View 1: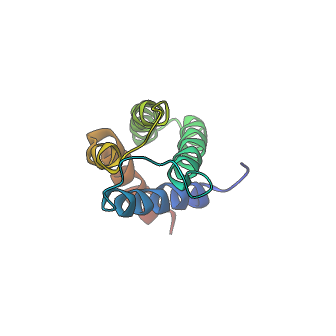
View 2: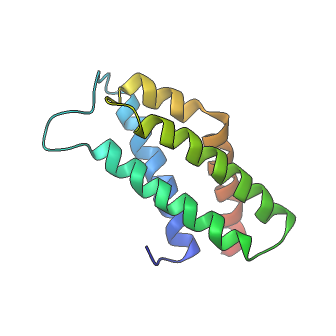
Length: 116
């Protein structure tokens, strides 16, 4: 993935929006229908969060450190979900509610405003 910081941020934001919709579907599992879009979305979010953390490591500022920490915590939560045999809507709803994912998302909203 060789995108810019704003593109990585967009992947996280769009992924979160998809996860909100997935959580509302009441699915017991992500199986069927030719693959798992939720897994693809989570994988994309993982790549983007990893790239954001790497990019922010070069910044060296205090807020960059906060973003790195929140990205690391979010990545751990996403990995836990992806490790499950079945990804239900309830599981994704709990991921969406995770303070770590929400903190990263809020960090990125703030960062986006400074990039404009």
